Image (cartoon, rainbow, N blue to C red; front, top):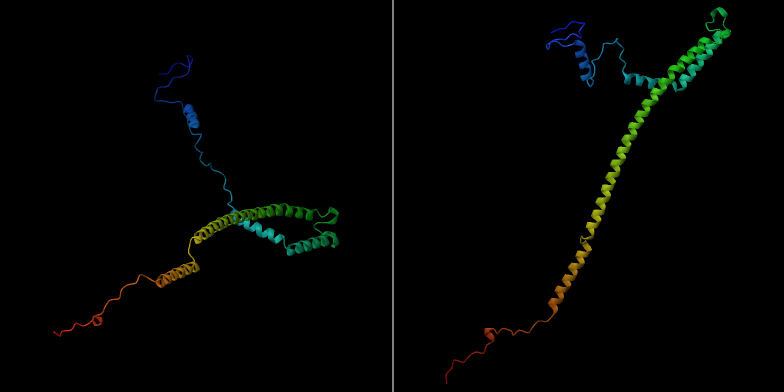
Length: 207
């Protein structure tokens, strides 16, 4: 039930809540929830990989002799035109110290330097990945080498207890010699058996 404004703030029933209080509670309880993406102006989408590849090609082309020769020819023609041609045909006269040419060269340098840095960064990333792969391959090769070394050592230890062919032959030869010696030794004399034909015949005549 509401009370007069002069007596104090307005009291609301249990079913009605203050909208300002509800808004503040919602803000305090949802700090860990990311906000929804706000609508912004459309921006052009640029593929960083395609731009990086283009910057590498441009930086590689700037490092060639053709670019230096072409740039030199361009500057010479520019200077000759604006020096020896009539004044009404000169677009960057000498009396202005070739202001337009200086501006163009400065603009080219200001754009070429970031492109070259971008190409160098991409090359550094590739080198870092290649070095990491080389390190992993070296670790695997070292582990394989250590494993093979342990296996070879184990085989050497095991072969020490294995009988070789020469050892077996010598043992068999000794055993054969022992058997031959046993056969040659004389044994106890035995009486030969009498055969029936050797026994004396008994006379059958009577006196």
